[in-house]
Length: 372
Figure 1 (spheres, helix red, strand yellow):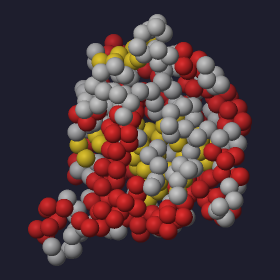
Figure 2 (cartoon, rainbow, N blue to C red):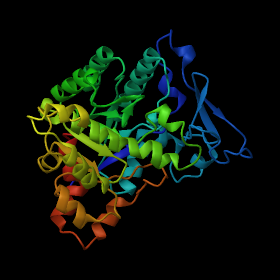
Figure 3 (cartoon, rainbow, N blue to C red):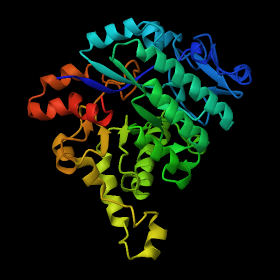
Figure 4 (cartoon, helix red, strand yellow):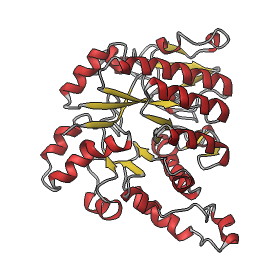
């Protein structure tokens, strides 16, 4: 059995931006490190992007994630080169230590909406994709990656989908919103169509996707309120827009939020779903009556997937979603509440689930989702 870690991360360094075009290079993100006796403590690093600091842990707009050279990062049992993918062999050694055969890599810095300038954002995304694509190509198939796409510039986004497909991407990363816009908006349909055409699933991942929402929170509750909850909004928006019926080759996945919320969200959208003949209600509900399909059917038929956590109620999940939609992951090398670095050994010790289900959750389902 091949173990697939459906959600690992790269901790970006400034090297990612070394190949930015000359017109954007002076505006690249700059990493700044502070003394450890400030209120940031061991989180003593931040990026400066368009004059703002990320993460921001001391005011409204709270975000929190790591940089590779903070004191907290240095104390991890993970080398800097493994975290940044500057040393791919070191990351592979870490995967071997954790009994992971394949890891799918997601960003860290870009778990927040950074650059308001759409052109700058697109340039940063291209630089990230090029760097991570090159790094993963050195791994002999052990590292896969998801690409960042400039959804706010649909024409450039479609071009980038084509480019990252050629670079070897295994999926498209997006958070629960695109700044102040919902994922089900028609302007984004060309991106979904192109992703489906290239067999790249849409990976709706935890992150501080909407600055307007993030600005409501000034402490660590932001991790749940403005990074996790928007993934549920993304579920309601994409399912309400009928993306999976509208684009038959598309797959959707929901990551780093747990999965217990999915049956609840399905129940809620069912209560609001209009019939095809009830045009008035469709306007009120925000659900397209022509393309809407019951989400449970998509989870059971290999079109929708969700990343679960080891301490969830699996009798409940299997009852409502089936055994073919659940994936699991390490979140490595992150160390937040989502992290389960030793998920493989923990799952193999379980006696409450049949081996058939454990094999699917440990790798089979993720292999189908990412088409590995």
